Length: 521
Image (cartoon, rainbow, N blue to C red; front, side, top):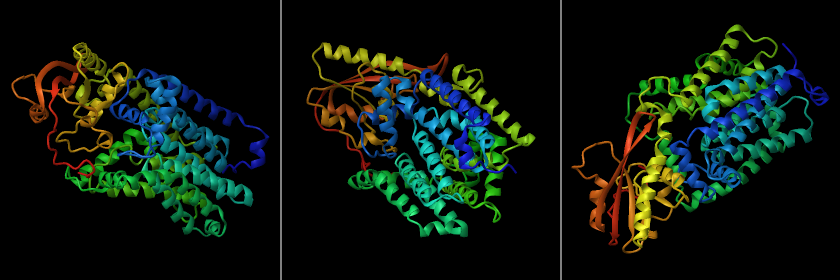
């Protein structure tokens, strides 16, 4: 087995393999930037962009690091697709560099190159390291935390090096938890792994781990403060979201869906390679650091296997497990990869290219209603119709507000309408609470006589029946007018429609909603 490079060797100069790793990371980042500029925003991205206009340590769904990242990007590049995504994409480069550096520290430059290659071609990287979602900062800061642990737990490191490494790990894991709550598995599982091995247990007699805990706590303090001021709404929502009972499907169907999601995001052969690396790392004879990383990976996976017994698990939730698993897989065999490992990278690359080509040109006959990319299309047309309705009302001297009944629709309208006006999500009879419930409601901005341009889901061609939201709102307005129906489509393939309604002359009052805005359904 190729021995790990010493610190002196690393300082002496990078090898060809390390330079190739850096080239791979830079090339993948450039490709992600190009992709991020071209692909329209997805519903959740528009929602998170609206967060960035109301900066806060926390939000209903997640903590606030992503919103601050988006705000930084849009401050430089404007409210554009790439403005929203540029910082998350650059954080993806940080994740790749940290994973490669961790593999390099464990097993040398060739291991680093393999890690960089896998992250460049893995389908997970297309979504997690391109789209403006909490996964981008989560994975970046988790990878930095792993890098800190690689150095902190390294045999032969002096006390000063260890303390600096623990400080990096503490700050990074604090930022990871301030990005997405699932990062909490990393310090919990790392503690289990460290305590379980005599070689690493000695670290508990040094100040490093406690400094790391203190720094992580200080980083998380604003998130905790925000939650305390909002009745712990974000924590309660995520606990319900991850562990609450949900009767959709049987438990074994949910488990199969969980496995299927991981096969799609990681690719089948890489999925097997990463599981094998975790298994080898958890063995009693494994090197102590690898045992700790394997403990982090299997603990995260085990939790989501359990979660799937209670409710469906979204494919990206276990992503936190794959960062330490990839470090283990890259470091496992630094000189020669087996044939099946090389094929695993090839298969992952092919699947990623197929997915990217589907994003660019829908060649696979996938119905638009089942195509997640299609949901990003069609909203410019809706926004244009809403803008026309607003302009007509304003020409008559009316005060006008823009609203939708779904939070994704409200966010899309705010992003695509010129001037990016404040929009409102009414959430009437909606089961899904969201951040718009915590911001000022439409009634707080309206005055008697105000008009509201409202966008509602409209899948039916019939004009006979009124939507429940319109039925509930009609008593509170002087006049209600049915407006244009706009088809949502990707190319010629329709996946939905929205109806524009004009509600004139607000009379005051509002429909009673049995849902408490701060309750968790």
